[in-house]
Image (cartoon, rainbow, N blue to C red; front, top):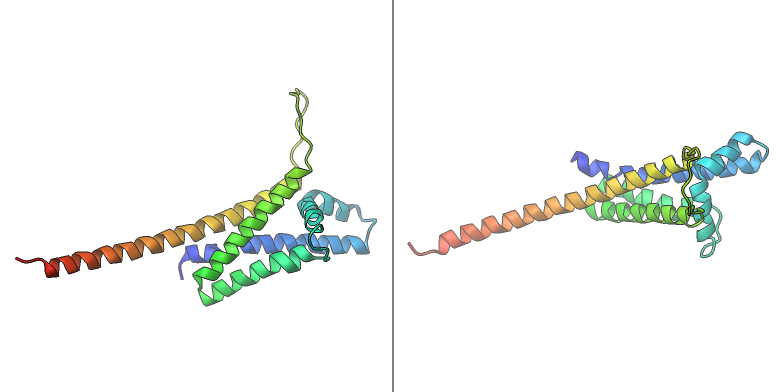
Length: 176
């Protein structure tokens, strides 16, 4: 199996792992609400999932929907695509993971305050949520790009085979 084919799995895997980690951190906070570490993890590292959950709750008010309704089905599709070596399943999984990553970015940016003036003050280093988001978005877009690259290669191969057949047919039918 092609290494690029297996690399398509990276985006759905990262999305599932991050969503699972965020869900586990939220559940752990329910059991230990006085833990400063769990509050930090929930607010700083996985704050992107809290914002997207707030937007999703307008449409679906099920606890854990991001994990069980979005990330898990995408991950299962990617696993099935890997096991069955199926391009269509991987294509669906990578497109859905990229769409969900874009939704996470969009829901994360909507609530961010904007500054309208320049300042010579110190610049704060972005919180860990930015790095989690960059990892999710980067891996999902990489998987998305690899999926398209593999399709372009397959189309190129098919067009090349068609051209070779047409050339052979023209050579056979040309009068000498």
